Image (cartoon, rainbow, N blue to C red; front, side, top):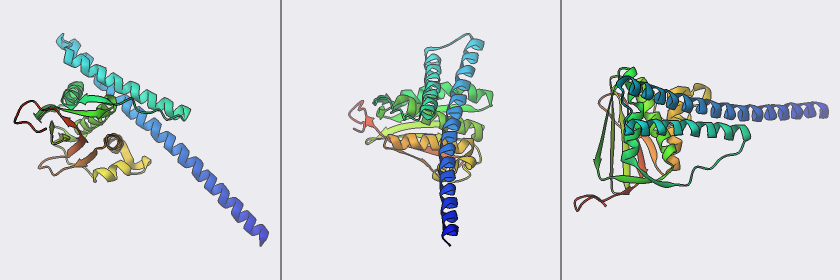
Length: 245
């Protein structure tokens, strides 16, 4: 009886140890997958942006700024990958006031060439007062970039990006003309790594960044395709007597 119990305990201990090793390995594999995902998108966007500039004979300041933003995102992915390798979690950069309207404009410009290559037209607009978010500009660019990449890949036709702010909150909406989300945002973001897929991984990254900035990512009703809303606490800049403070 004692021998049998000892064997059962040993087998159980080995099973728990194997499970812990597998969970740790799966976590590191997901980190690598996220880094690859975050490298592929920005580098493709930067390369196509340079090709478009070369073909038209024009690399405008806006396009160069957008390319620099995407290369910064790629560098950030390498930092995250190095953190997984060394098992040292690197803190986010010190927060700074991030101009959301400028960030949206740069993100859209960065992905314009990728959209054109897929036959997708990008439209962007900002309504209301200017707004700033206290946070990490490159992380926020990761969030907006993933939303744009998903919309371009799965939405097709036309992708509309709307930004605006009022009463201490800012919203960035990405609306596409596709078939819509296959499941709620929260479900796609928390699915097990092996079943998450590219779209779910991008939404998981954007969700984590939104949460880290005190905001949220959610889906909103739409007459066509998917409509994802990134909402963040913001400092709304008054530009006149009629603006919200």
